[in-house]
Image (cartoon, rainbow, N blue to C red; front, side, top):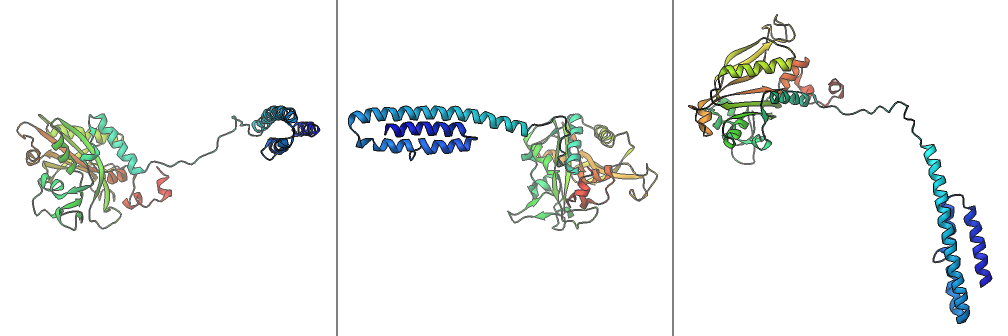
Length: 344
C-alpha cells in the first residue's frame, strides 16, 4: 500500500505539472483528491491493516494529500495568471479609436416647452405648484363653482366636460384654473405660483384641437397688484420665450374667474404682422388668456379682496409649441412618429 501511495504521488505530480489550463488541473484534483479519488480509496482500506500499519500508512496518505493540494494550488495560481494575461491582451481597448455611436432618446417637444416656460417663470420669481394642489381628476365644485362659473354655464355641459362614474360631479378637469383655488385654500397671500398639467375636453380631434392637451396656469396674489403688473410679467415672458421683443396686444375678453379679462396676442411670427394664412390675415396670433382675479374668487377662498388683489393667466402648451416651431397639426404631438420627434 505504501508503494501504491508513492505511485499516486508520482503520477499526480506529473499530471499537475503537465496541466495546460485550469480545467485540466481541476480534473486532476477530482481524480486524486475528491471523495471518490484514489487517495480516499486507499484511506477507506486502512481498516483492514494492523494498528501500526494504520498509523504509518495513514500518516503517509495525509502527507501526500497535503503535498498534492499545495502543488495544485500553486499550479492554479500560475495558470490563472497566464489566462488573465491572455485575456488582457485579447480584450485590450484602444482608447484612441472613435467611440460607438449610441442613439439616445430625446425629450418630447411638449416637455421641452413646459420645461422652458417653467424656467422662465421661475426666473421671474414664480414657484411650481405642488402636484397635490393640481389633480387631474377634480370636482365640479373646484373646477367651476369656486371659479365663479354661473350654474348654467355652457362649459359645464357634457359636450365640453368629461364627467366620471367615480362619484357624482367628479370630472376630468377641463382647465388648470382649479389649481389656483386649491393653492389659495392652502396658502395665505402672498402667492406666486405656476401649475403645468394635462386637461381634458370633449373636443372633436382635428389639426387644431384634441381632447387631451396641456396648460400652464399662473397666479399671483398680493397687496397692490395691478393690471400693469400682469402686462409687465407677460410681456417679459413673450420676449424671453420667442427670443426677442415682440409687439403684443391685450384684447378685452371674458372669463368667469377674472375681471377685467383679456386675450393676449403677439405679432405673427410668420409674416411679422403683415397678414398671412397662419394669422388669418390679422397679423396677430393669440397665445394666452389672463386677467385680474375676480373678487368673488378671492372671497370663495377666504381672501379679502379689499386688502389683496392678484392676476391669473393660462396658456396652452401645444399652441405655444406650434407657434414657436411652425407646426401645423396638433396630432403630431401624440402620434409617436419618430420622424417628427427626431426634429427636436
